Every structure is written in C-alpha cells, then in structure tokens.
Image (cartoon, rainbow, N blue to C red):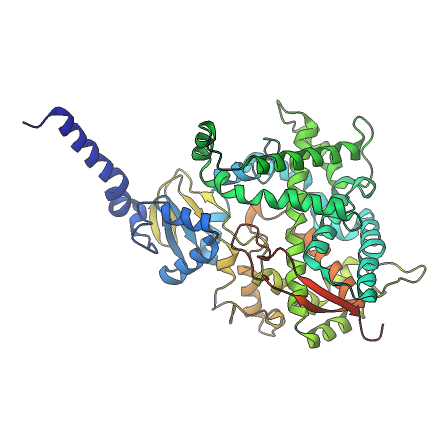
Length: 511
C-alpha cells in the first residue's frame, strides 16, 4: 500500500492539473475561443511577458490577424477587434477592470478614470461634462483668452525665434509644454497655471518626473501582489527613485491646485473645471477624504491625460507634414481662408479665428483625424470585465462573469477592410466622396474610446490640436533635422521611442 502522503500528493497533483490545465484548456466556456498559441489557454504567462517586453499592442494585433475578431489572450482574458465587439463590451454592463484602479488613482484617491463602477463614474462625469462639451469649449470666453495668450504670447514667439536663428527644436518637448499650459489654464485659471513654454527648467523637471514613472506601470497594474510581497522581503521591483518621483509629482500638483484657489478664498473665474468639480462635490461629497485631495486627484488625471498625449499627436502630425511640402502648401492655403488668419505677429485689434471656423477646415480635420488613427497616443487595451450573467460575445455563448476583456485602437485602426493600406498616413481617406466608406471609418475610429466611458476631454483635445496646427503652418514651414527613434513605443501611452523629434522652422513662403 502506498504511503498516505504519496496518495495525497498524487491527488493534489491531479486536482492541480485539472484546475489549472485541463479545465481552462478544454472544458472552460472560453476553450472554444481561438488562442494565438497553445499556452494562452491555460497560462497568462505569454501575454504578461509580452506586456513586460513592451510588445503588447503588436502581439494582440498579430493574434487577431491569425485568429479573427475575438481571441483568448489568457485563461481568463479575451480581446475583441470589431465594431460588433465594441458595441457588446463598451455599450454598458461591462465594468472597468481593476487595472484602472491600480494604475490611475492619484493620492490613493479614485478619480473618474480609476472609478470601476458605472454609477459613481456617472455621478462624477455629470459634475464636469458641461465644461468639456463642444458647445461650451467653442463658446468659452475664458478659453479664448487662454488661447490668445498661449498661442500669441508664448508659442509663436518661440517658433519665430527658432526660425530666425535657425535653432533646431524638439517639437515633442515644446508641444507637450504647450499642452500642459493650455490644459492647466483651463483647469485652474490662466493666472495660476503652468508656463512650461517659457519656464524651461520647470518643464524639464515635470517631464523627468512623469517619464521616470512609466517603467513601474506594468508591475503596479499587472502584478501588484507580487510587487508588494517582494518589496516586503527587501526585493523592490519598483526602484525607490520611481516611487519618490510619483510622490514629488503629486505634491507639486497639489500645491498648484491649492495656490490656484488660495485655500479658503474664492475660486478664480477662469478655473472652469476646478469650479465645476468643487460645486459638484458639494452635492456628491467624497466621504472620508479631504476635498482638496479629491479635487487634485481628479484634475491631475485630466492634466496628465492632456500633458503628453496631445504633444504626441502634434509630433507625429508635424513629422508627416515635414515630408509632404505639397500637402503643407494646400493646408496653409486652407488656413489662410480663416477670418482673420492666424498670422504672427497679429495686427492691433485682430483676434484669433473662431473655434468653429477652424473646426470647418476639411483638410486640417483630415490631417488631425488620420494622425489620431495611425498614431493614437493611447493605443493600448481598455480592459473591462464581463458581467455576472453569462454573455454572448461575437457568437460565443456562456462567457462567464469576471473575464477580462478589451479592445485597443492599435488593432481597430489597422482593419484593412475599413482602412485600406492601414500602415500608410493618408489624410485623403477622410475626404473621399464615398460617404458610406468614410462613415464606416468614423464608426471604427476609437482614439477617444466609445460609450459612457468615452474620453470626456475629446472636444477640448481636438480644439487644442487644431489651434496649434493652424498657428504653426499658417506662419512656418518645417523640416526634419533628426527623427531617430521616431517609431512609436508599444505601450498604453505611446510616444516616440527616442522621446524626441528635432525639427527646423523657417518662415512660410510669402510671410
């Protein structure tokens, strides 16, 4: 007779094999969903390794090319890549995955992005949706004053100096500074916002703090328990300087918020987002938390969302246009139809062209739209979890609850049937006369997401991007000095590998 411990060991081994191999690979309702390899059906190691390598987006895209519009990335994870899949997962009922809570809560306090459940998210969104609506953005006198100051008094003089002196310019750093100045002014009021365009030291400090946090994203979001356990036994996966950078960045922004309101005094009239959020919190208070930190957590998320992403888009737009002088000529001719055109320096009494008139520039819209398609600044998966009641997803029945499921713009925007030659930057695809084909492209366009969790700041971002493009290409021509490392990083936020693009500026012909 075999010893009892041997029998027990065999039983445990068999139970383990069934639980972790046989059931997920052959008996689970997910077993019928195609996998890119034989390991994905019973182990998350493959997709975790790809994420750690910085190859997640391309790996998921390759999996969809091999397996179709729905793939199994791990024992408890799916990815969908079709309009029908988007409608099923993102129309409602599929709550956000805990990944967002792990990666996006500031000061340890949830904000709109890191809130997992739909109801509290909707309450928070209602507090601020008005200040980010297209009608408010386009009609705002405060935003118009902010735009004039940042464009005419800061950005254009810097570009004029670069053109006059022949000084090469890192357009990623400059447009990231522009984005932060613009965003923080709308959040906190122009008087207390950043001035990264002119304060180079503060700009570089903020970029350093922000960028050095990126390597910790994988560990914090995907393996938080392992990360904490190793830290407790003296094996820090995330180096202390990275944790210090996060704390320093949060402290800096909290001070920025408190300085803007001068704690206890009236909120400045220009601090539209802050004011709207503070009024909303009076109706829906956040129990157990100091209001200044609740507000700072929310506004820091807004600032970060616009800080780098808009700079990335402007970087790739200028990179593509620097290689296409004929398109720049046509774009500038379109921009000069604005009344008044955004020339530098502006004549006395002139104002900026209206946001509505800029929004009506068809070629500019196509350039921005195509840049957002091919180079989405946030191309990574947006994970959700399946509801407790079994779901049917793209023809697969009885998908159980609590399965991680996502889509990503990197894969969606490379659908060859909707976007012919998807790897080519072709703004003209948005100007075709075939309305049905163009409408289909807009339906699949997912840079800002979709459904109730769609990016609340999409109209703000588009206005900021188009205004910068008009300012630059009405007055200047650009050429590439150094585009080494221009290829996009494979990550959730995806700028150039080299974190730079060096351009030369010269006055536009006729200026």
